[in-house]
Amino acid sequence: MPGNATFRHSNTSVLSVTALPAPEVHTSAEFDARIMDTLRRNKLVPGVLSRLVGIKERRWWPEDVHFTEAAAEAGRRALVDAGIKPEQVGLMVNTSVSRDHLEPSTAVRIHDTLGLPRSASNFDVTNACLGFVNGMQIAAAMIDSGQIEYALIVNAETTRHTHETTLKRLESEDATADDVLQQLATLTLGSGAAAMVLGRTDKHPEGHRFVGGVSRAGTEHHELCVGDFDRMTTDSVGLQEAGIALSEELWAEAAEEFDWQHLDRYVIHQVSTVHTEQICDRLGLDGAKVPRTFPTYGNMGPAAVPFTLALEAPHLERGDRVLLMGIGSGLNACCAEIEW
Image (tube, rainbow, N blue to C red; front, top):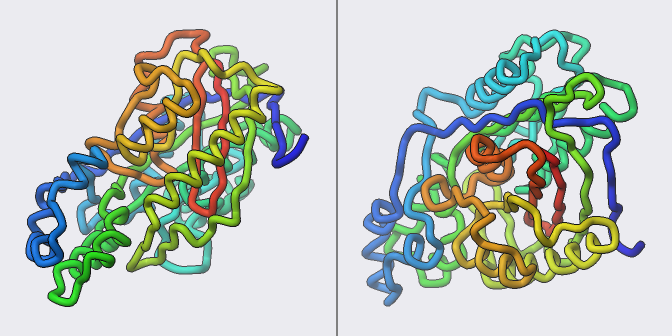
């Protein structure tokens, strides 16, 4: 088969998934007001974030809350929900894009905060917005092989600093229309946390089986969205077109192995109204089966898919088929099925 691998898991189930919203709400109207002079000077119409992108709000953590504390709290809640004690965890993967420094890993701080045992492996997996799904793949492979019994995947994103530095630049009298357009996607980001516990299916018949999935890479597009601690520049149109095209390629490849055309839920990466509608149109999905969190939480990066799944979980029934659909700047894409 051309492209990247199709994968199936034999003995891994999702035991719990938890969403932890950041508490401080910041509206798109508030952001528009901050850069209104720049918008008017460059003859740009305000309201794009809420009207076209569909994001009315996004959230920040309080200044005295570190994002790793949020990741640890989400992980703690996921363990409680799964009925798993910290000492039973064999692997903890942090998939956050957010970080304070290059080393040590962010995972070690979360591992320490949670009081996980010395026997629990821990590391970061970063792959832009696809990181959480990749963390699930790695954990499931280790569970299937018998290396571990339980894995905890955590993610927390913080956008306060990036938003504040971006707004400050765009408030400047020197800010151009190109500056606004290239950095507008930064203002769609949101803070939030999520966590998931995975375990052995044969020991947890109450769990939700992690079936498998398909991934594809389109790395020729690695310059379309580039971000660091202070700035993210995005070719929004180019990224949208390339991402949809890559998703179509993946979908066609998946059809050889999986029947995904009529599932019960499609939990896609949360970007915008346009992105969601185009994905549904191009892949032939029923939009009513696509839960949306971006209007009030923004694009939470790799936290978006598990966060949305956690909020949708109370509405799922036993036996429902759920598809996690992630795509990350770079570009990389992956779809992974869970039998609820």
